[in-house]
Image (tube, rainbow, N blue to C red):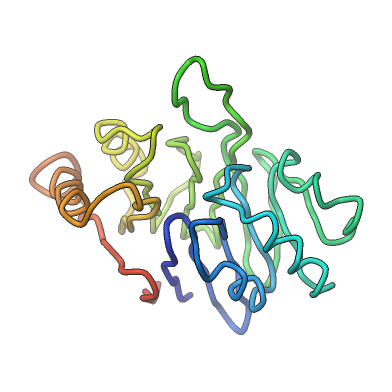
Length: 214
């Protein structure tokens, strides 16, 4: 499997000719082009930095074979126009798409503040290997090889991120959701979350556009 990091929360996964795109949001400049190449799309929740609504709607209209999976609050907006292309998912679901085995975990966005309502949020474990949690530190009841770890945002907290990594004990941790951190902030976060500090697994700061072989 090849994992490519895109801006903010978006990644793409490629294997045996199949391409899966996760969270192509409005803060990902190449979201439209990624959707033009994807076989399927996974969306964790409804916030704009995780789903570019206009880009997804255009891709669904242009590509009848494209499927989009996400919470009902997300995919329901496209069901009337594209009933055969959208699939609502929830905690405990399991499906195969674009050659990948996907399981769904969690159900609610992390709390930002008690005065801000929490929306539906699911995490995706792909091929039992790569876990994208969306905006949550929900710990799935499954082993995770590569954890995509959100490092910035109004809901994140360094200590909770460390406990999340400790609970999962992945072999590899890759930073996502980083746009609210400067380069110095990212390096500082990597230091705190790395070996010798709060966890035993180094935080990989994968530059946008670069690919890891998993």
